Length: 157
Image (cartoon, rainbow, N blue to C red):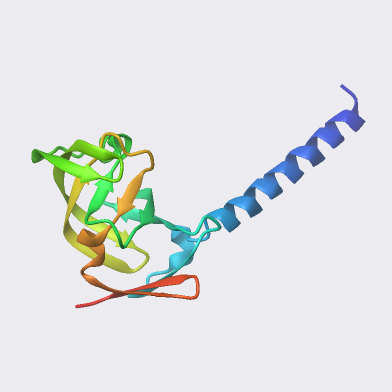
């Protein structure tokens, strides 16, 4: 392999890495290190119209979709396994995808930036495609406002 080929390959790898980094920041603007530790967090809406962020559940970093229309916190089976959650009880649920069975759990903590809640009711939803749906069992403890493509979540004591 010639030096010229290695140089071109290195340039292409650097270019691809830069494009990936920039597109990830555009698609997922609410990274945990950018949210800060203030008692008010401001989420930017993604290009798909949703509010996605990185959060800490029981101290573990997870990707969440913040949804004011969801009754509770729903966790995929994959994330439940990662968090080593064990269910309290099975319940029948009615979702946009129809009837299903979920498994009730209690989360020790949910933290989004500096906004924190303890002992949060949640459900393991085996059919959930995403990671975590962060709904009203977390958000109803906060002051939540939507304005011009931003969601402001303020800790209320």
